[in-house]
Image (cartoon, rainbow, N blue to C red):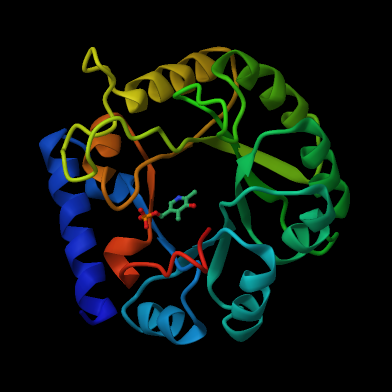
Length: 237
Ligand SMILES: *Cc1c(COP(=O)(O)O)cnc(C)c1O
């Protein structure tokens, strides 16, 4: 399917999900996750009006950023200490911040001529042993460290909930009690705001679950497969 058409389909899904929960359509941004896809795919999406792109692998992203510097580049993958300088210099957002040490490095390495780096704290909302992200109880502490860093701007929370039923089920993110991890994420977001953190971004929802995320207040959905097609598993381990 041409990217312009799949983008239009995703925009229609976002609009329908917003309407279903009585939210304005403008309240949900679309991040096009272009990891594993080439510059041509990014350009095709840009021609169709897409501006913000998400990447998970630093090395792969740098070539695309050099080729399409006018796009808005968001880093959404696991971030190691030896890659922070490149991320600080080439991205406008990091969604996957889950360690104070990485936060400090990003702040120190953010080039002086650039605006502060926008960051979200990644929360391991389903409490999976193998997943990245802080547990909910540690989110406030990390937020406190981030707001003290001059070259970072704390924007909100990000999560990738575990799948608990088949991907083609509309309820595949719900636990055995029917509770939505997106609701738990939103409750954490609201409580941090009550504590005084000025958060405006809830980065939640992907190709298979953006409706459930929008129903629970997501302000930014990260969508790859539904825009660009299936990724090659060898390129996206
Ligand atoms: C790959 C990825 C996505 C996109 O997932 P799709 O299911 O292809 O929409 C979103 N968020 C993160 C953090 C990812 O790594």
